[in-house]
Length: 175
Image (cartoon, rainbow, N blue to C red):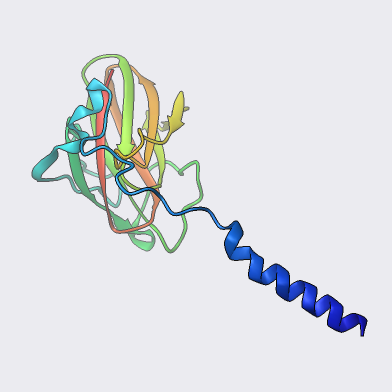
């Protein structure tokens, strides 16, 4: 008899669960043009077919900046990657990554923005630099992750680790 009462109580709880679910998102909650800080304003402007290929290793890479517009960034499967410096986050064998050499002409705060979640390391002279800030982009912007580093003039290697797909969009700006 007690079993039937418990079963009936569990069934009534199960029927109540959908009532506790979060309400659906309001249509039109995002503005037509997301509000971005001035230095990230070009995120909404695609770099007209511009693609920068991430290297699978750090040998013989050309030194070039990502650019000031959102850029397509094809990545590599885990098994074909050879990072010059071990990433701070252990690579996942089911994810993607790559290295992009960049040259900074002046000191400042480098902001790296991605449209997907991935680990971002910035390497200089064989050392992974500590980020000074990280978080998500502004609401409705399409920026999934932002990481900031204080940089001096010189050559760096941006390492992308554990991206969910073989291509992401990236943007790097200097404040």
